[in-house]
Amino acid sequence: MNTKQLKEFVTFIPGINPTRVQHQFENEFIKFYDQLSFTEDYKHEKISAEDEIISTEQNNLALMVGDVVISNSLQCATMVSTKNAGKVLSLNFTKIEFNEEQLDKGYFLFLFNAYKNVKYQKEKKLQGSGSILRIPLHSLKEIVIPVIPIKEQRKIGTIYIKTLQLQSELSEYSKLLELFTNEILEKSVKGCY
Image 1: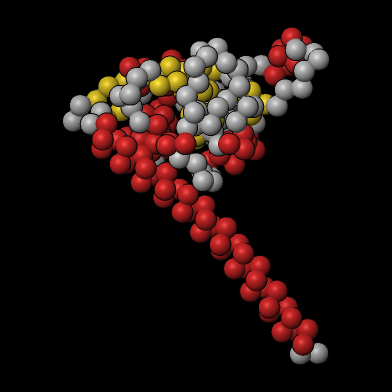
Image 2: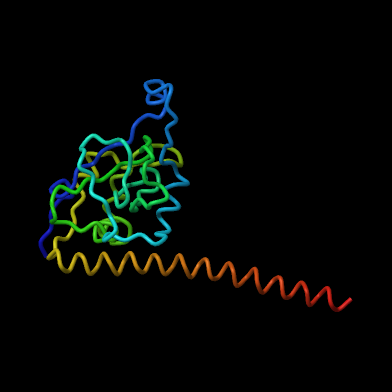
């Protein structure tokens, strides 16, 4: 199997310090991409690589739909949804810019979040003390991934994203079913006395 380092396909752009930006743009209200935003996007609510918008400005601070973001503390990646587009990336996150059409975004998400070999590499590169461990940018660049034809990457990426969407929908369905069942059971108990 052909393998290459991530740095051959992507560029890592670290988030910015919110305090510095607030001082620099005192009169403007800036919405930052935070952990809640990441969690919403990680649930993959109705996003797809086909709906992505490609940024033409290299130094644009705002995230766009379809941008891929890594949570530095969780060591997981997701795609930005329409709900969080326009937010500015904070220090806790790293944006991924894909250099060419040699690596599919969905395939990257699968590799980074679920592929056992990449998970193992990430665990080895963790640094820090206490409960918060992070992977330094230079280590992210050195992660080795399997390179397969782009057509196969797209298939794998699409299946991975659709599976995550289905899991999210099933989770929501499970919560609604539990609420519905509990409401009926409570009415039954109240009807008995």
